Amino acid sequence: GDLMDEWHIGDPVDWGDGWMDAQNWGHGYDDEDDDDIEDDDYTNPRLIKRDEYSKKAWDLYMDFKESEALEYIDMALDLDNGNSNNWNKKAIILEAMKRYRQSEECYDRSLDLSFSPLVCDNKARMLYDWASNLLEESKKLPDGTDMLKDAKDTCIRAIHALPHVNSEEDPQKYKHLMESID
Image 1 (tube, rainbow, N blue to C red):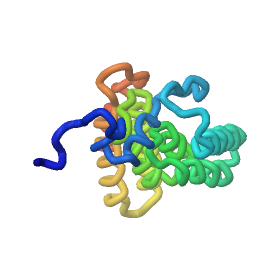
Image 2: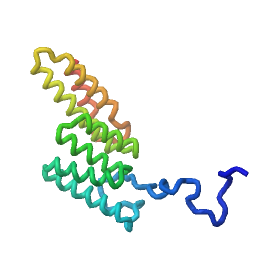
Image 3: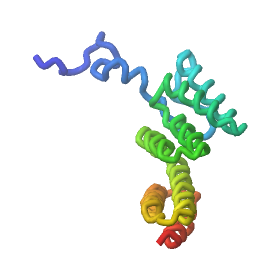
Image 4: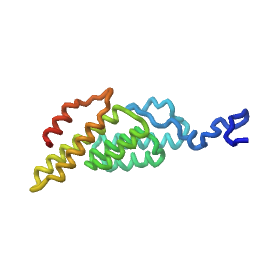
């Protein structure tokens, strides 16, 4: 008969799912409050360590120690790179370091793992700041056309990043930036 027929009593519970998937299932959470992680297995030393590193990273970030914060969030992601909350934190840390392109990649990873209006807002704000910086820089150059084009593209991505629900951001702010770039 067919190998993938159906589950029988005595077969492993996660038969057919692939054991690793079953192990790693359900660890992405979207919540600023790290204390109420329901899906996580509190006894898994790897996840306990991950959450310690994540918390330490955030404390360092709040203390304006971005490069140390980045080391800790990377350690957390090494232990579990499927955690959307930690990709969001990494994006925020990189943004503070003005490493916008990498920050955008991390926001995208976070959103691929778990859609969250909060992360969309974060990404939009970061892109807004990036576009504003490009606009300012372009004014200092004798020929800032390329930089102006980058500013415009970045601003368009910022507008696209805004979530259609539960956004804290004012879309007008983004439209005004677009107008000042044009």
